[in-house]
Image 1 (cartoon, rainbow, N blue to C red):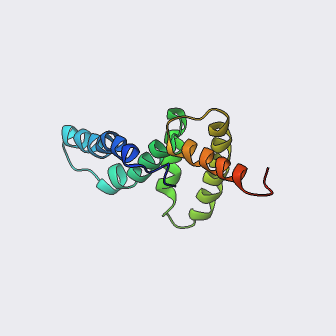
Image 2: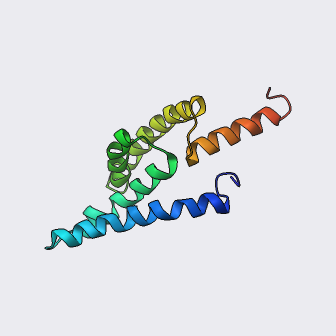
Amino acid sequence: MQKAFTPRRVALLRPWVEEITTGPLDEIAAAGGIVDLLEVYARPLPGAVLCELLGVPEADRGQISSAVADYDKPGEADRVTRELSAYLTELIAVKRADPGDDLLSTLALTRDDVSEMAPGTG
């Protein structure tokens, strides 16, 4: 885990965290009027942050963010957990084959490195 959260990597996260958190607020302010902050900001925010951190491709982010937002709705947690687990299993395989500069690639490769060093795993 230390490789994934070095001071340098954490410092690199700051600009996109600011963008993800303030961008929607700027859009809400520009639109004016009354909005439901839970629906337009609080629910989508964790999904957006997770997608960016994990390196989820842009094309998949809406689907993932929606699933994360549904997690706290009655009766949805099990379905969301299954869907996200299946998706992340596939994404990990992609990241192992073609790693990027994201948390999921770092964790997958770090786990692989540790497995290769462990006795009886090679």
